[in-house]
Length: 157
Image 1 (cartoon, rainbow, N blue to C red):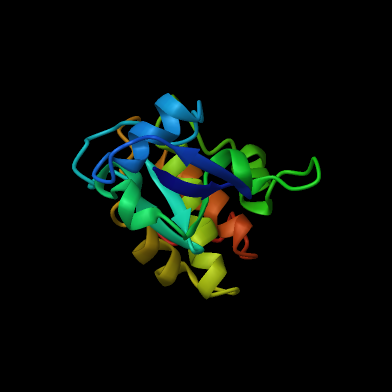
Image 2: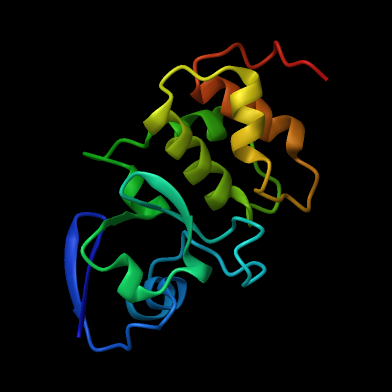
């Protein structure tokens, strides 16, 4: 038995410890925020917060996540209000197909958890391994800048 705390709720699951967190989140807990992208921990589509830091759920075992608070895209909203990062992505239309969106939002939330006022270089550094295949990079960067309290229109090339 594995006990996971996901989005503030405890779950006791009869799964092997080596089961990948992504599979448990999607298949057993029916959470659709984290996506299966590359399966190698490289694209970021499966990102979740573990203890407030971004982690690739396709590369984390349940045993490694046990006893640590996990937050998915669904768990960012509180009291019926979206997280400010989610609001910024909506305001700046930071999605095309939306597949990478989970990872982008989780990555920016994790950045803000450790650096409440990051500059553009820190934003770009945080997003460097979150891949978007549709080409909405400009909108994603505008949304990230807005979420971080920077002028979305003041981007450098």
